[in-house]
Length: 137
Image (tube, rainbow, N blue to C red; front, side, top):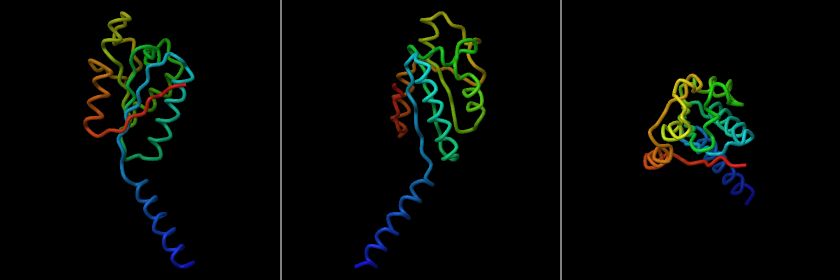
């Protein structure tokens, strides 16, 4: 019996280790203007991108989170810039949100890209098999 339990535990441990090696694709949905939410999103993306360097991560900012993407307002500017330089992390902001707030794309942190619609971007990623994380407080 002990040998059976040992074999089962070894088998499940092996599956867990193998699962961690499999690349993932995760889109993070950030709509909050709360700087704590911005910091939490950065912490999650940073940890995941380091733990899974072969995986892809995208942070989609729209609505109230637009300040997270702005050079002169972001509380996480340095981290966004550093992560955006990595090959496996992308930050995008909704062009509709920029237009609604009369913000020019030149005001964005270097490395932040734009997409026509943040919600449609998330929908498209999900249709492509990406996992979805909603960042909230």
